[in-house]
Amino acid sequence: MPSLDGEILPNHLAKADLAALRMAVLSLERESFAARLAGLLGKSMGFFDRLIPRGIGVAASRATEAALRASLRVALSSRLPAWKDGSGRWHKALATLTGATGGAFGLPALAVELPISTGILLHAIAEIARAEGEDLSNPEAALACLEVLAYGGASGSSRASDIGYHAVRATLARSVTSLGRYAVERGFVEESAPVLMRVISQIAQRFGIVVSQKFAAQAVPVVGAATGAAVNAVFMSHFQSKARGHFIVRRLERAYGRDLITATYAEMKFAEGL
Image 1 (cartoon, rainbow, N blue to C red):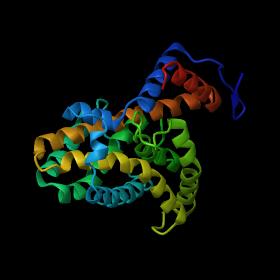
Image 2 (cartoon, one colour):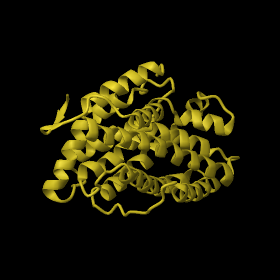
Image 3 (cartoon, rainbow, N blue to C red):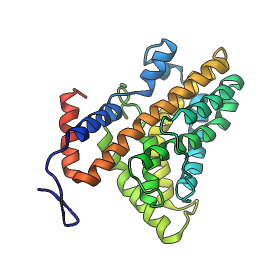
């Protein structure tokens, strides 16, 4: 039987945990933000790639970096307050309100709105993490909340960056571990620290895809506040789904060991044709 730190672990998953892992696989591998937007607006998935001109891409890139810097500071400050909202309704309501503002005032407002939306999103992700047994006073667990933004990338689309959950997680692992160790040792993270820049760059590469699609959908002049609000609601729901999947995997890894969960995850992914 597998072991973890000398503890004997079970070599098969309980029925409820198998069901939870299957839900995580579907959430992390199948659902696409572009597909969700397409369903909302009645467009094809490729519509958003064609709609993103250089101006929106540059604005999204700048806003993404600002949002990630702010989110990292919050995540590593041990100030992720608890807000018991198991349904996530309040987070969706706040995201909807900020989306309405961005949709009403166009692209300049979206650049201001994104850090606010990302802060609300990080709080929603933290609530999901706590529900799955994470201790967010631990910098590694807090950073796992921020990792979710990278897992929300282009799953289910035709983009070259569309790689699976475990591949993205492996890419982030060394940098996130180094940043967590840095935060523990120094109690803060310097803006110019290379490890900080590396984490921001890696997460921004995938989070920026979703942000560009979100900006493109909200920046169309005829969209207005109503559709801007709906886009932000989809944005929040998408990342809440990814967060549930990610923290279910982490919870099961703590219970059964990473090897068994990784192998079972891969079997389920293959069986679903993902």
